[in-house]
Length: 274
Image 1 (spheres, rainbow, N blue to C red):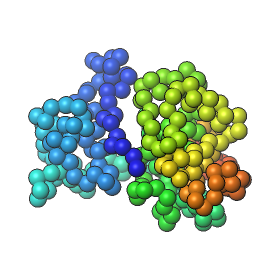
Image 2: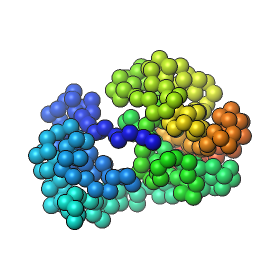
Image 3: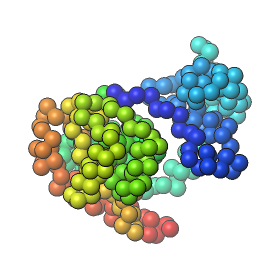
Image 4: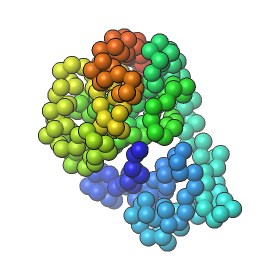
């Protein structure tokens, strides 16, 4: 359904002030980020292609990660993640029990409306899944926590992009060059600005055949303790079960109510842990 993600570097900050950053470290982290349900092993060549670098450079990075214990060589000569890689996220997860609290509310909403539900955050050109109801599925691939989708074609991404100013959204489009993924994907900057204006006016985002033909989604804001939109609550369904208009008409009210409850929980957590 989705195209392979491009290398996540160099970011603007690295290009603007290269002496302040380690591109080698960024490349090593980008290799670790290659792993997902569809990519369980990497080779020197696949890493080189992903990074846009030489095979020799990719080899040195992979062997370094192996020496540090984050990768191990498989019987086929490729490299796979080891359990040590969990240590990178352990501190984040242990310090973010809020995710468990939000995940429970996501599951409650999914059970109430019988649709897949999730909470996503914006990460560069993509949205990343922070909470999901694992019992329901609409995407062509099985998505897990930490997996990503292109922001410009997903309801959660469109909602979070609409929270940007027009100038920032133009800069985002120039930086990430959104590509068509389905028959109705919006990719032109001016069209994205118009869509963002509609999203701001009505307070929610929708997609209908933009990420995947036949898939409709609805995104509502999750606000922090200062009222800023930080996350998005997303519900999805196949259009063959109901039209996009009918989908919004049926699920907007319960999803908005859930988004308000989740925002209250999230804001309260931040207020007491700031």
